[in-house]
Length: 366
Ligand code: GN1
Ligand code: MG
Image (cartoon, rainbow, N blue to C red; front, side):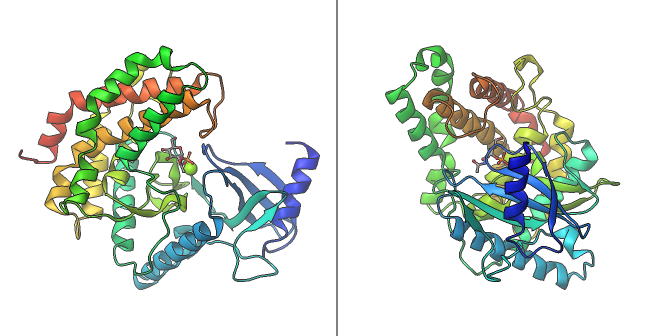
């Protein structure tokens, strides 16, 4: 980062009610949507500064209100449980110096927010059976803790995990084909359309009243939680932008998509992409424990469906973005979204091949 950029960022940081004066800024994390930095002050404190992607999150005020609602509710649960190291267990949004009721600011057209930095923590891009089980328990518990939230949450991205809508978006992209990319991806489009009916079962079940929506995290990528630096314990769940109502498929399926995959979500060599059943088993064990007080039989029975749904949905999203000219996800090279799509399709095929085994593991009788 240039000196001018660093100066701009420390200036923005100082608008927030932080301890000391912002001195140093470094880039942080691997998110595909927002830009994240760690800020250090002359009082020796660290904070996380984030530029919110306003093209995607159109109503930043509603977004921030959601996060404050969610983190306050989680904090209440932690107090009830007698947890002591509160600042490592839930992130805290930092208000503005000038307005204690506001947690975001606008600067030259960009939207910024500041949150607490969790000391002695680490993010993972890959898990072991032990960290996968801890992750399952933590995401399950996250849903359990939010199951009695009474304040309604805003839908920060309308229809975010609505598979029917995602398919419509893809079909619109195909019809418009602004860069003539559709001809290269016909084989993938055929595979997607062949599965469209099956993969939209969740939306039909919600409409028919057979499946409930709950407050979910909706972005349970393996790197969206913090682990303790020195153990396999999960400290807290981060990246709360998409916490909103969804089916539990979102949290179970999206974790397995990245966590139980033998390669990265953008692995160019699809031969390397497959389900790791040991991680599947460990995560599932943890998730079933975390959700045992509320998960219904229907939800449990459909967990293998969720495992297939999320690589499928992500393939549809990456492919639509590729066809549209890469306007949504950050990309590092020209056909990055296409490479990601192919990896997701391979992950989907691997889940499909293991579906019966997953059903057996879950004790599902169909
Ligand atoms: C985005 O911001 P990040 O990288 O945690 C995306 C998720 C995708 C993911 C794919 C708001 O998450 O939905 O699954 O990339 N977030 C949004 O890597 O679209
Ligand atoms: Mg993230």
